[in-house]
Image (cartoon, rainbow, N blue to C red; front, side, top):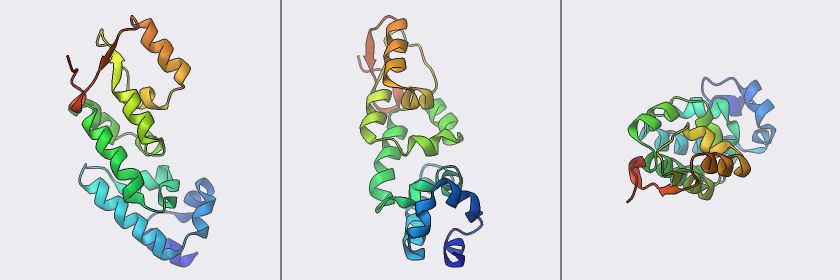
Length: 154
């Protein structure tokens, strides 16, 4: 356990293991590589890897953090406006969103009511399908497909 603590740097291992008990089964080498991959990904978008792991230590369980988290971060960055990204990048919910499938992230962020009504990115991704569909219907039911940077496409 001391070796695992070393690989996690200044993070308190107790709460991490309570949130992700399977982390104890990973080798210190795996944890070191996973943290390095996560730092490389998050440094490019201005997010703290340590903050993500503190909130969602299960991110370190992926066999390839880069393969699992990288595409999700890229999609989030591409499908959100600057304002939405700034709010999301500083939110604790970002770590939870990164455990969702890429398909869910893209599907939820690429559709919004044509009336331009907005709600938080985290809510749109993490809410149930029924609530999401109800939210769309309550705003007229017409969907606008959103392209890169959160801009409507025609």
